[in-house]
Image 1 (cartoon, helix red, strand yellow):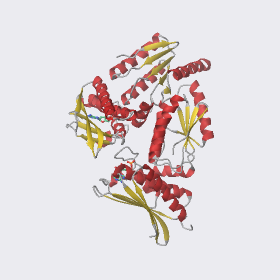
Image 2 (cartoon, each protein chain N blue to C red; image 1 turned 180 degrees about the vertical axis):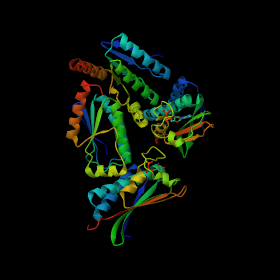
Image 3 (cartoon, rainbow over the protein chains, first blue to last red; image 1 turned 60 degrees about the horizontal axis):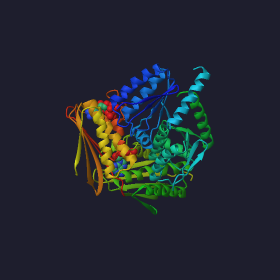
Image 4 (cartoon, rainbow over the protein chains, first blue to last red; image 1 turned 30 degrees about the horizontal axis):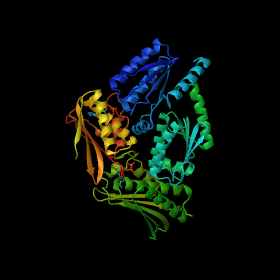
Length: 124
Length: 124
Length: 136
Length: 136
Ligand SMILES: Nc1ncnc2c1ncn2[C@@H]1O[C@H](COP(=O)(O)OP(=O)(O)O)[C@@H](O)[C@H]1O
Ligand SMILES: Nc1ncnc2c1ncn2[C@@H]1O[C@H](COP(=O)(O)OP(=O)(O)O)[C@@H](O)[C@H]1O
């Protein structure tokens, strides 16, 4: 089971599938980092709507992906954490510090566009 | 006794009532997480002005609510902790780490607006 | 000791009743707002421990006179499992369950006298005393 | 105790199988969605610890009845190196490796009862119990 990565304008969207294994998640990290270069993507949406849980390994790896992509020049936003998943993560103490979150793909894409527009203006 | 949740622009405001039970506070946690999705809220104000105390269970649950809502894409700010309540919380050693606080509803709403505007422009 | 108020503790609503009773009794005695909040918060912690760890018990509130001064006395009592290591339970941050582990040490800091009597299989009794500031 | 489900844990796919089995068993018992997510997440943490620190082990899932209430029981068991200092391992943020150190303390917060039996050279057994809310 792999994670499909779609191109949407200047952004990439990684669509997580349920039942993802640790190895698949680690493979995605490599994959996205390479693709950001290939597609000259300025933004990446990590869409975890389909995940029925995010444990501490998942949170650590997602955070690592977001931080690595930023170093590659792409803004990253994590979208679609479901209410029960958010609740369990809060219980675990997983805060995803430093990672942007948005409700769903639509909100996440909108956030990225505004972010990228601002970046163009401020010369960042 | 339930906690009324009002919609105010792109934000939700949860108005805590005195005499809140543990079960009611836990119910609010579920409720807000779901409503953030329904209303596509970008910010949530937890207004505890009417609470005459916040004990360790209350503090732990409020912190959990704020963390979970951020994972759902909504910035959260806790407002209205009264001076005597703050003093008792400090005696207990309750810190509400990682939770944004403001003096009252007005300050909290202003903080959220600035936060949301900033979010559009820069990464975290 | 004057009249007592007994609040049976079985579930979360009783926690609210107990702390509200403590606040009311303290107010009638003449405690100021800050002290009333400390009293109510300490009671809330003890009452919740009864619900969480013993299942049932009671909070007894009373006014006493000691050495010529008036004292609010709170007794939290249960016949639950007791606490095997009290020293540990009184440490900030130690919880056997999901708590923050601040209830017992925090309650202790909020009052003038704190006593705990517990042993495995013998239940737990915590007694708090708060002295009315002089000139009230 | 009723029938048991045993999931051998050897590598990352087994972690997924174990948590999915836990979710399924919990659902058949009548747990709500939020509790099922907590159960599955706790199992995921324990199963991953087996893979990471012991290399191999198993997760046993069972339904029990205690004091008239139904309970989901999760036992994570391995013959790995064991944990030298359990107090430390149960602290938020302590990891001997690259982890966040939130697995054991987090799993504890997600259930009603948590027990750990471990010693250097004697393996590790963690038992979780989650009580079915009354009226289900
Ligand atoms: N009434 C009680 N009966 C049995 N055990 C108790 C009782 N009150 C407290 N304890 C034990 O003492 C520990 C510390 O209590 P406390 O400081 O109030 O923190 P918390 O309730 O957050 O764990 C509890 O985790 C529990 O193991
Ligand atoms: N099954 C096990 N066997 C041996 N050691 C373990 C086991 N589970 C946990 N540990 C030890 O306890 C520590 C804390 O575990 P945990 O809280 O799950 O955090 P993490 O796995 O992120 O380090 C681990 O770093 C490890 O040293």
